[in-house]
Length: 112
Length: 111
Image 1 (cartoon, rainbow over the protein chains, first blue to last red):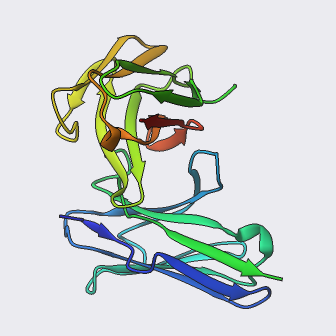
Image 2 (image 1 turned 120 degrees about the vertical axis):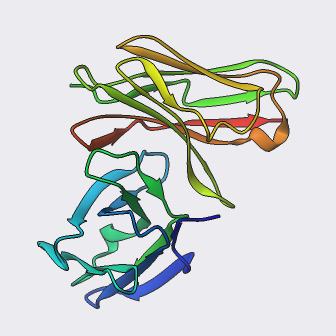
């Protein structure tokens, strides 16, 4: 049973517009959430994280929102750029040092 | 630091053969993780080590899979005998204080 779910396998967005990637989780014990970005033939790389004591964390063009009551988080990228085209994985853990449980990923395509 | 180094990058083998995947973690990292990526299941945690000791191997699919970490700078994931359904990309990651660094992965194809 998937504890971290990314229900959209793919997303296509025009350059300059906002990209919104969604993630749901089922385990209420998760308290640390991360987004990873993966290019073809490379390993995932860390993008941004959020602790359950916050509901928003922003880093440049990337913002992660956490809705604990809905067990939902989202990654906003604005403005989107063609170089953002990649697979984005949502991950969750118990504590910042717990092992990560990943979703299946969402492939983002940003069209020029 | 060169990051997490995995070898080989690609492996094609025949069903029934033994396959060994290798990983060199980042020096000083005390956690090492093996993940498998497939279209159907995404990134699955297979096993992880802390200070060279296996902590949780509940993700290892079958007895055909085994992993070792003989020292802090080396780990192997072995599949014996391999089957076509083992075809996937296998990632190794290491961490210290929660920050994961992934290797580039080994793409395994079992024919």
